[in-house]
Length: 264
Image 1 (cartoon, rainbow, N blue to C red):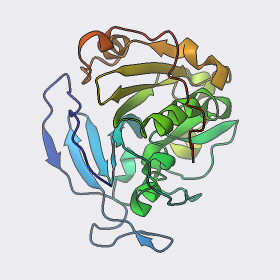
Image 2 (cartoon, one colour; image 1 turned 60 degrees about the vertical axis):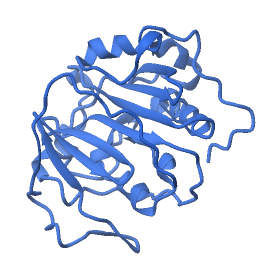
Image 3 (cartoon, rainbow, N blue to C red; image 1 turned 90 degrees about the vertical axis):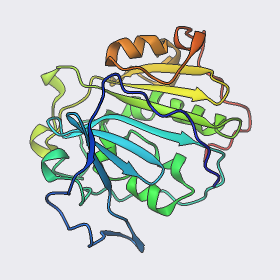
Image 4 (cartoon, rainbow, N blue to C red; image 1 turned 90 degrees about the horizontal axis):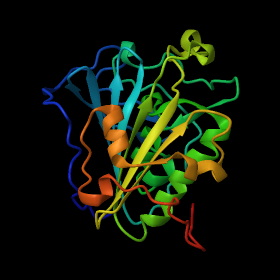
């Protein structure tokens, strides 16, 4: 697949980045195996209070205190991949144990193992599609939301990446609602209140959503969750690579999935 360059994510504060040596799990010279694919060591960098995990084709930022992702980023390019999605979830053996979930088992309680970066957008690489099933890329998502509004955002990206190269940036709104924190004992992670996503086209146009992690967040409700990029910037206190009117304009509706789009 061709590799084009988009503007990097601009952080609001200067971060001191350095590669760190994984603690816990296997050593860097002993690759874990998923099926017949030997997965390479995860590139780990410390950025302030977070760990930046550079996988093949996507990046995830981890908050060790929360044992979960706070942000993700990837470029979605023309779909020419056919690698099958893996049903096997696993702990990343290269990430410190204290920085990630303690189990890769299903959550239960009506929650899915929800991807931050979807496997389907990485299907040009057998390595990337398996790395997307590391629990560092997974968080509890209510099944109606994961298979509803959140899935529709993924389908929009899936269709529009064949029209224009896309930069996709998203993240987590953790909140503070102990009533739904079912997975602290089993997985070591709390349940996020919502998830946000910004999609930037090569021509500068952008769209943004904040999707609540609730049963009400079904596909037909996605337009209710439209926001401006500036709204998200104020929420996360971070500057995103979106310029001009695209930062402050909220579309009247989500981008329409083109008729005949191959969502596979």
